Length: 561
Image (tube, rainbow, N blue to C red; front, side, top):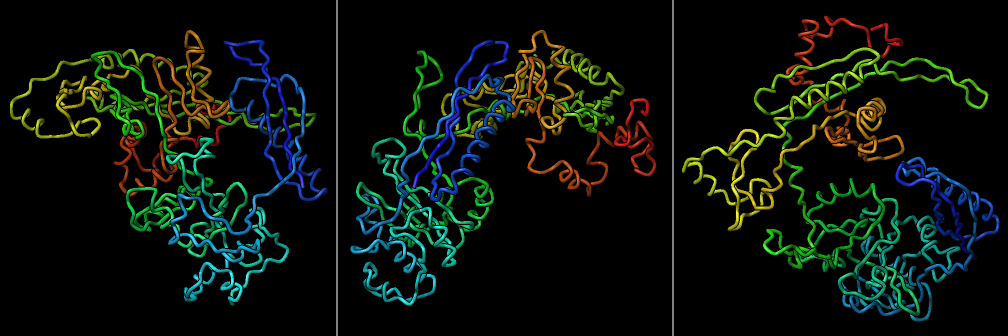
């Protein structure tokens, strides 16, 4: 048996402004796969070739800025395939040797059928057989009425044949491994040791699944039945009570409903192992700085600290673009293909703010072939109008003794909600001067007035960005001043300039816009006050049967407006 991998070395030539003309070699290597039959060689070569071609295309398409210059070489690496397999009995590693209440290590000294005996023991438990004595001896399971069909299965049994065992015996098997730190750090480490999933069945959290451990040492490997996964993982946290464990990430929960909620998200991911940091490099702060070095516990604890992002922005803009579809015919490889060209015909926006004087801003609409340019010009004028407010820093209002007593009675920071220490600052709103409460010194520095306007489009990355990005590039002094968060070459989750930040609201919603609107429908037109005000002003009614106009989807020419 052999396993092979194919390496493709590609030279790339960047087409960016900062670097031009450079050629850099890039290697694309495919995943090694086992070949058990000569008939599988040709299909495997084709599969590897297709996978590497897809990766090259994806690199170019996803906005890397590089282009393929030439293929330098293609190589195929072949090595002997020695599959990992369970063997005869071995003593488990010392850190888990004492877990006899969770692991059943059957002593098959004279055969390589450890997987078979582990499955027999597991099925006896599921079928309610009495535990009895001599549970570690092979003789007990040789006489058992539970039989495992191992027809055509190798002994010792490799992981690659677990799927065959499942089909022959109508069982589900999860396979786990133990790492003493060598896999993660290259050497044994108590801090980095732990269990990890190797192979999971279709429904790994089912109660009928059989969990087995593949133990290894320098000489052999061995299948061990995991009698109780919760007991096996109890040492991973300070809570030593029984837990409901997720087999994908090996995280424990105190209640089954918490596990069910977690499983809905975790099932979308592949099996994984959680690794905690063991060291963090700290920076040296100048003498007198309010920022101090963290303790070891603080270093190893990941916490949210971007409190500036939780402070409400004084202004937001909601915008939308509508297009007409103009039929076009293009020639592709000698064939005529009918397409639809999307031409912007209407742009609207609404300024939203919690500040006094901005509550009743009207919806602004632009029509016609230059609607996008008019929209961007209106944004520039709006920014100049709002700039004094965004640069405002009203002095703090005078506070009476009763208010100070009330603020002093609150023990937590008004920004991060954590407990205050002796050093605390009185925080206030920079727009109104109103006192908000006490904060930590670092939290107080986070309350800075933003110098940009956030503009929300629903499905910006999938549609609206294509309509506005060109106009924005024409209006800035240098197109490279536009910062983008690119998901692909022509798909932007967000992009920003010095004045504006264009954001996709769809990326921040947990359901579709249609679903959210339907949830508000029962509240009546009042739930959509900006739309209600616009329809009342434009048409004199908010009743659908009284509204006039041409359905936008039927428009094919700007003259139809």
